[in-house]
Structures are given as structure tokens and as C-alpha cells.
Image (tube, rainbow, N blue to C red; front, side):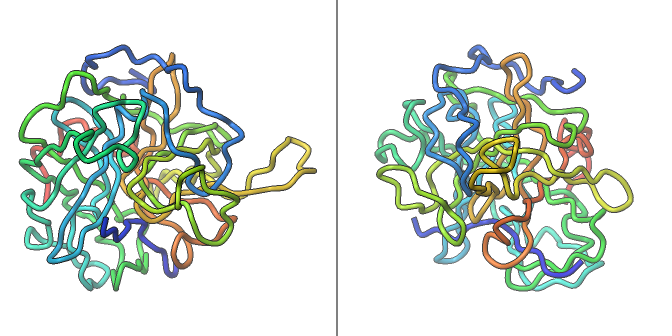
Length: 320
């Protein structure tokens, strides 16, 4: 399949709605609506209390380098993210498994959420953030079995065995103000609108604008409304492609832009709204091309429905 690029960022800085945990607040969308006209690479800074309460930033340290990733709260001590956010991604041939020695120590991983839900992590002051220590890291046992890894680039030979998923178990429960997402048990249909969310950068080729007082750097929670372009669920893999070129109107007569995940969005969610609940359908994984990938091509997220059993507790019995 050729080179694909992981989207982790180096930062020095019941049906569709099966529930995984009971929320401590109502799962209703707040008064900061998702704007369907927000069609840029990584969107605009989130002022949605529901999103800010559900999507934590994950900071990982390897040596003297710190990496930013994104995640989704499933219950008070469980965060869903991408495997490559918590693996030391050294060179590896396709068909060879990573081992426990490649898993980053839980002591070097922290999970951050804002105290004020109207102000996302990256915008809040240091004392405006709750930081949670990680107790255990669970990586899918066949993470990247089907891919060669070299310097952050993937040479995908077998898309069915990419398995880019991990679970973080926190040492203590998050504060009661935070919210938990629901897991999808079936894939969304093509052309379904989804909310893509993450702490990745909002700069590079094809970005139309950066939000006010925003330099486009990673570590700030942003969202955009995008659309499912393709579902791959079978012998070729288990992915949801979201994003690519989007037009301002249905006639395709006005200026087109694109929206997709980028460096730092890895592990973050594709959300659909179902009965005013956030349902996570995909986990951000990779894109085509260098950097954030080609502007008009979609980004690929691991299908949550395809891995429902592993995410919903199976990781406790069978993990790296």
C-alpha cells in the first residue's frame, strides 16, 4: 500500500450507542453548537463543554522528548487512544510483533483535562488543568503486525493487522465534572457527518485559517465537522476514512477546503451525535503522504465497532 504517516505529534510543549460507563453529567450537547461550516484541517478551538469534558490530552515522554496525543474517556478511569501513542516506535519489519519492552512506562504518560470546561487544555493556565497519572497501559497484542515501521512512517503490507489501539487505566478516577463517551457497535454509513476532535496542529499546506489567538500549534483541543468518505470492514482492514475535500455548498460551485487529522490528533475520536450523546466510531490513526498527508485525501481511523469486544473489556485478558 505504500507509505502512510502516523499522526502523533512531537511537542515540546446499544446498537450504535452501547454504553461503556455511566456519566456523572448529562450527555446533552451544550450551548456551543458544532458548526458545520468549520471546514479546516483541524478545526477551531473547542468551546464545547461536552467535548472538553470527554477528550483528554495525553502527554508521553521518551528520554528528553515529549509527545502529544489525544484520547477519549470511556469511564472514570479508562481512556481509549492509539497504540502508537504509547509505543516506542522503533524500526520494525512487517510480520514482526512489538513486545512489552516497546510499551512506554505508565510513569511516563499523563492524562490532562481542563478544570473549566469552557477553556480547553492548551488555552488554560497550568493551574487550570487536572493531571492524572496512568496506572496501566494495554496495547493491542497485534499492534502494527501488518506494517513495517521506520522513523514514524508505515509501510502497510496487511491492513487487517494494523490494530492501532490502546487503553490507559488511570490511577484514580477523574473528577465528577467529566463526561464519558459511548462506543459504537456498528460503523456509520458513508457521507455521515462526524465530529473529528484532537489536540493536533492546525497549520501546514491547505489550512485556510487558524483561530483567533491561535498559532496553530499542538496541545490545543480543536474540532471540525467532516464526513465519512469510506468504510473498510473486511479482509482489507477495519477502518473509517473521514475528511478530504469538502465544498461549502451541495452544488460544488463554491470554494472547497479540507478537514482531516494531523500531528497530535492520534488516538482522538471520530464522534457522531446520537440522541445528544457523543458516540465514538473511530480512533485517529494515520494519513497518506508526508506530514499531515495530502490535503484532499481522507484520514484513517480504526473502527471502534470492529474492535468492540477488545475495547469493552477484552483488553484485560488479551493484551501486549
